[in-house]
Amino acid sequence: MFDHGMPVTMAANQLAIDGSPLLAYIVATTAAEAGTLTVTPREVPALLKLRLSEPDTSQVSAFDDMPGTIKVGRKSMTFAGSNCGGILQASFRKLFDDGASLTDGQFWADIAQWDGRDIRSLPYHDKLVTLYKMLGEGWHLEFVLEMEGREILRGNFNGNDPQHGYVGALNTLFAYSMRARAIATHMNEVIAFRSDVSFTKEEHRALGDAVEVFDLKRVHGREEQISNPRCRLVAAAAALDDLLKRTSTPAEVMISSEDRELIKIFNQFISLPPVEVWLKAVVPKIISNRRLRNDPRKDQNEKRELRIEFEPADGYQCMVRYGSSTKVT
Image 1: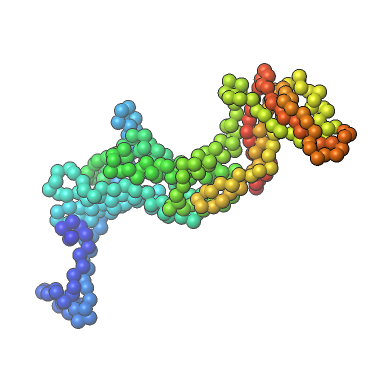
Image 2 (image 1 turned 120 degrees about the vertical axis):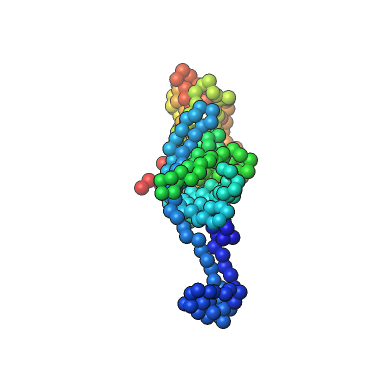
């Protein structure tokens, strides 16, 4: 262990000390109490310089340096360091008799440090999202280890290497957390981060759909229309007269629902605002117009049911948005 810069712990009763009466006394006293003696190698400050590079284009992007320490043994040295507030960590060992190769090299994000914190204010979240997104897209994380300004070794971390499959899993979690944060911001909800969260593709997709609606990206024109919108309208006959007179004139229509979708985010259930569908430049076409059954009234106050299809006219646009139930600070 000591050959590789690692602490060594020995039973005190197995040691014999010569040349230092004080140390011999300490060891003898410790041995009498069935104690142990730990020898720890000296740690030397070191700096791991990092940058991202794209192999195909030679494009580079700077990243924060990582301070740490080196422990040196007779056969190898070991580096350990961190940046991004201690969340991004690295460790590796360099064997002195093995050329330039590294062993036990690791880069990882200790995102458990975020557990329980508001998803809207996670430290270094965006920086790490960008880093792992680039690694997932094939960028390499190049590093140079320096000690007292002298280069000790250099290498690179390839996120697409099969042995680093966790990069893809972390990117999926980061995509989920970005969507969760967007919803929490729009809703002014406190949602606690959980590094052990699990979710299905459908649950992840539901978050993406909600974010698109909040960001007013659910908008399309006539070209993207698969079928004409339809609705069922129940009202007093007198109230329908004006609508029946507009069946040849383009109008703007808003269809709202009182239903509120319930979605799960980091194991919390959030009730989304009611959905509104805004139709611009549509011509209402009455498909059916009938009196509701069991309604004894025969006058203008009787309730009638209309089934309406909205035909797009010039300038047609359909937008899905959330109603005014969204929380506002």
